[in-house]
Structures are given as structure tokens and as C-alpha cells.
Length: 227
Image 1: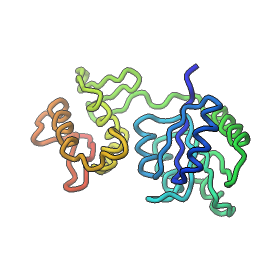
Image 2: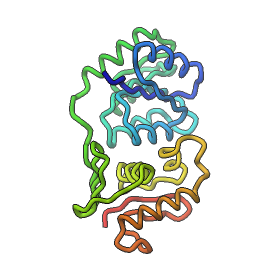
Image 3: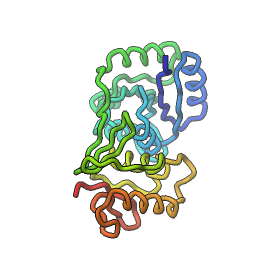
Image 4: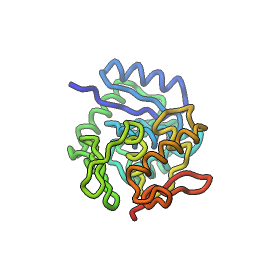
């Protein structure tokens, strides 16, 4: 049976190491990120089966991460935080967290709670097809069509388009998109990204010089729009 994917969002190296080793021993496939932006990018690119989320992150609050995820995802979220006050716990649960565990924690109990939320999760598949205007992206088949016509994309072009379609209508910054597709450390590779965007526009726009789908937000990033 395929391993369930757990995304760890925590900027403390010791906690990530403990969770990676401990949950790995239970058979989970563990991925780690250290910031809120990285968490949102990783979840959008390949949604995990569950997320273990700290509230104190270097770029944004874990509460904001939870709020942003719940705009489009039903992935189970377990908050694991040193913040122990009841007010924060209630706020996290109201924002869509499935459970709240205070540090320090027992690994066996944490794994039991992971299993519990996975059992409770509604067994509905994520939206298999993303749509924007006449553009459709079938995630199950990795197939893109425009007005019913197949559009052949490279794997990287597909990942870029998928991320933009997942966040349709929202501005996606250059660094966020680069991190989502290529990973940490590529945030400055804007020229490479522009090349891939140009190729995408050649394939999906009626007039690549006047794009209707992939709009440029000057000096910020891109926005996927419905024509």
C-alpha cells in the first residue's frame, strides 16, 4: 500500500527531525518545510494526506496558513505548538484545524491522533479537474485541454499551470511560484520562469503578446484569469 504523505511545517530543526524519524518509522512519507509560504506552495503542488503545523513561523502565523489552506483544501491539519492558551486553541479550531496538540508531546499519541483525523476525513477525492474559462486541467490524467483540444505541456509547464490554476484569480509572486515548482533556493531564477511562462502562453493564449489567461503583475508575479 502506498505510504500516506505527511507535511511537517515547523522552523525548529529538532522538532522536524524527531517527527521525520518517528513518523517515518510508522510508515509515513514525510516532507518538511520551514515557513508558511513553503507550506502553501507544497500543499498546492502535491496535496499531502495530513499537515502537522506549528503556529510560530518565520514569515507568517500558522493561523494564517490554516486560514489560507481552508480556502481551497480539506486536508487534515494538526496544530502542534508551544502556544498553550485556550483562546489560540479555539481560534485554530475555528479556522479549520482538526486537532491541537501542545508541545512537548508524546510521539505515540501524536501518531494516534494523525490516524484519528485521517479516519474522520471525508473520503471524497479532491477536485480532479481544475477549470478556468475554456482551459481545463485534469489532475488525475495530467491532461490539459483548451476548448476541448489537447494541449501538450512539458512536466515543468504543467506544474506551473497547475499552481496558477489552483490559485486562479490571485496574484502569485515570482518567488512563491519558483519555490512551488523548483523548490527552495530557486527564488531568484526569474529569467528561467519567464521563459516557461512565454512557452505556456504560446500554447494556451490566442495572442501570446496580449495574454488573457496568464496576466503579468508588474514586478510582482502572475495572475491566472478567466478571459
